[in-house]
Length: 108
Image 1 (cartoon, helix red, strand yellow):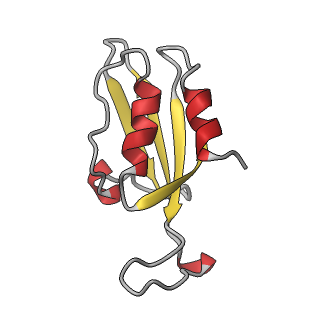
Image 2 (image 1 turned 45 degrees about the vertical axis):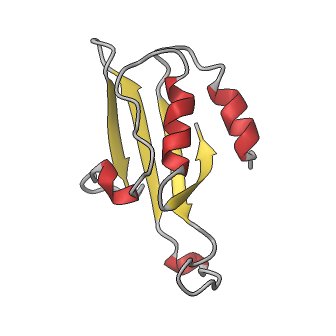
C-alpha cells in the first residue's frame, strides 16, 4: 500500500487528460467517541474522475459494489473538487477528497 506522500507524488506526474480513481474508507477512529471503527463498519467509496472532450472534469462516486452512483456531497469535503482540467488537477482532487469524512487509501 502506498503512503499519501507517494500517492501525491504519483498524481503530480499524471498527464492532463489522465483519469484518476480515488478509493476512500471510513476514518479509523470515530471522532465522536474516539474509538476504533471495526472493519465491518467501515464505509468504502470509489471516486472516479475523468476529463470530457471540453476539458471539464466529470465524476462518479460509487460504493464499489455496483448499483447507483452517489453525489459528491456524500463524502462532505471541505475543499472544492476541481471542475476544469488544468495541470495538477489530479493532485487537487486527491487533496479535496482528503478534506472530507473519509481517508484516501489508494489512488489509481
